Image 1: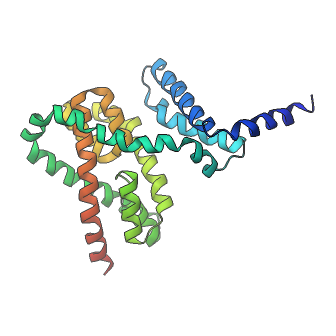
Image 2: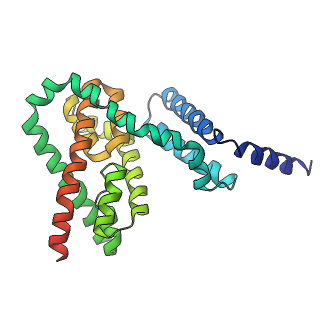
Image 3: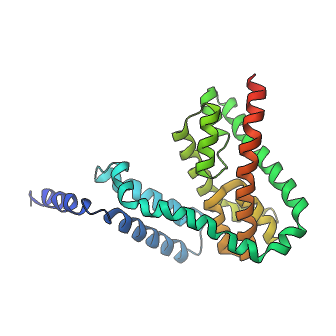
Length: 243
């Protein structure tokens, strides 16, 4: 019996040498998480992305696997983020006439959402005594990760902290966004999409697509425009106040 842990460890070391191991585990864990979410009736606290993150993190800790080793095997998923993002243009194209009719309200909403997202994050950080580099890392939390990390670097913040905050923001947006919007009486699919895409970027947009094509189309557009607005406006405002 005493040899069993060593045997299991040897098997894991052997399997870990296969670059497809972590990709396969990631896909399996997500499918299990999605099944749990579905069987629960769509409970927000059982969001499949959150469950997958927790399961993968626990697995890496238990097996003493570094993130670099995990990423080497699972990086194909990272590669697919690009095509997946581009694919958001398909529902947007189908809903183009609806988007065009709502252009003024859409841009006003995204501008307000961008300012609110960055401003509220910085204000809360300042109230809790956050340093300048922490505040600059908090500001772009509602922007998709590559853009947010670039903004943080320009502001002199911590890119690694921003990456964590972006993921947490997206997961929370996907978890409680639909529930909160329903609770406050927002039932228009376009309005729901704009709110989720502006506040919760890609992860919330994936959740919005599950509601309807209209919600997903507006969420994808809001995600992109919010990233653009924040990338342009935030450094200007930050440098103005910093100076």
